[in-house]
Length: 316
Image (spheres, rainbow, N blue to C red):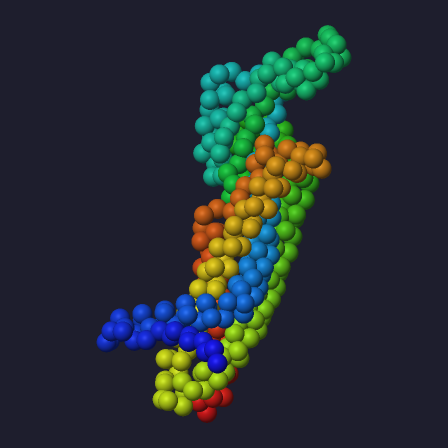
């Protein structure tokens, strides 16, 4: 009769170092001997983390787009007359001193006319006879990132109106309010989806890894009968879950990267904009590290949750 010898890890050195080598060796041996079950587990973790990663990729790019749009939050102060150089400098300095001011740019009447003509490029004849004097001069004020929400803009306008010599102020109040409402809604929906996905991932991973544990029920019972402690029984399987989680995280990132590049190279065929030039970005390094770490943590916690009930049953 043909027999199969499954080489198992043994404690080759005394002390903690020998135990660590034994646990890692046993974990790797378990993965090799139960390759299909481990493949299913890693695939499940990969799929779950890929869903989370896709959500994060969309969220990151929406945040980037929102930040770019928020740069359009601009306050404009109009004047009925051209200001003398000294008046311009004095007013500019006082505006710059207001908390939340990023940039202040003076637009003369001539500059305003040039801009107007630039926007009507190809139809300049419509402006024949139009003189610069009919257009107002202005200060264009760009706000800092933290001062672009509705409340901050209203506070800023109040301080701006307190400066003597300031003329008519326009800042697209309705646009600012709608824009900030959209950002708040997007963050709330993103947070709820994120929580739901995390809970779903923990549930899926825990139940999948439980299959691995039950496949080795006899082996765990034997280890308990010969006097192995709970920690000694659990540790190889916890390390196995850790390895599975790290592998799942790395595979999820690689798949996401492939999807990202395929989208960049082919989206121009069915979208009205070029995704390459529009600034669509991949996940930043800290997010990538977070996904891999989350995979490791999910694998570890999934193994722990699956083992806890089972170990309690076989050890009494």
